[in-house]
Length: 231
Image (cartoon, rainbow, N blue to C red; front, side, top):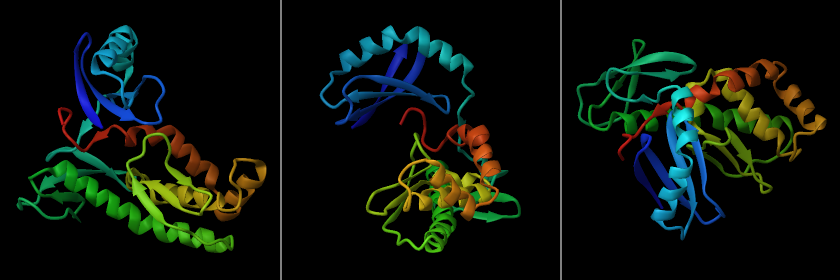
């Protein structure tokens, strides 16, 4: 269960996320947005007290953090590593269309429409790349899913299921291919030992440059906010 806590000191909205796996309160800041993870049965008053104790840290972190980019008509969003303007498609609803260097988006809930566009684009490019990488390694792939993950760009389970962040649609195609190869290599090596990186290099000889881009630029992909801050 999620929600929003409003604090006056500092003046900020904090997204509250309750997790059955959480044993204590944890506060993080991504894309200029504060997020508090709390145990399922923790009271909101306890969450507020924790936030007040952390207010100095939160104020300093917010001052240093880059501003979030709201995905609205007239703003820009990254697609394949390039900034693209978001324009009104003239339709109240429907899918986004990339045309003439702009992303034509319905005026109603443009953030949700752009998120759906990016998710579809990530699925269309990463799914075949992951399957091709797995085939090159002689390993079957289970289910492939796409989520808005914050802590990692991809994951691989012991059953061979792969998951990816759909925000990778904003990264250059070569970076997406690297992440697909990275997770496919985990089908063979469920670790990051030297043998694992040899597999990644076999699949992506230039993986170091692609990994470097993600480390240097990946944080900006989380700066885009597809839902209103007050949601």
